[in-house]
Length: 293
Image (tube, rainbow, N blue to C red; front, top):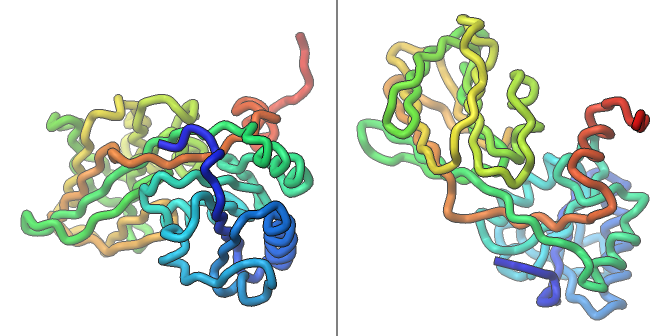
């Protein structure tokens, strides 16, 4: 588990290809870090337009680097987490997008953050991930990892039925538009829109949040992270999708079982102590920022 960033010598830069601001900043940071003695790597869409980084295929970049530098919003960070797939490599995010709950800082402060990085004055925070298995006819047909959430929804606009068990105990038959299983990191993502609670990022818990349930008394619940969650897709359901972190989709069939567990692997997020979690919440969710004390 990375405790600090002293070991970092090789840095990969990930940007949202086509975002001119991110592409320009990525090239500038690659030049700046190269001058500081770091080896720089980037995906072909970025590296091929730069003189300061080696071009590496997306699926290979995490085998080349000691740290990932992400320029973009939370979606780009989730893409980086998917490339890491549980590898103990820290990720530093600079927000160029919208809400940016996972980012260390915004673009305007990037060089302040990077100077702190050079001084090894940034913290690395461990975040939990989820392991997901899909069983069909008692055989595992797919395995995934998720940082934010696991979502089951219909492909068309109609209710679905999902039998849900927690730690082998039946909880409920959810008749709803869908079901979200979220980590604390994902508590400020889709789960929040489904009236789920906001969890502190390092708390040891999992959220189960129905999406627009038919029975309005079925509310989101929070369980300990060691409890396994099993979801049975009822027979004769409409075409359904399993979605991981809003980025990977897999079709589901009736009687499929989705098994969600806390992963033994973690996601390592570089934190900049210029803003606390609650300061970020106040900014991103537009809570009242005036101090009335």
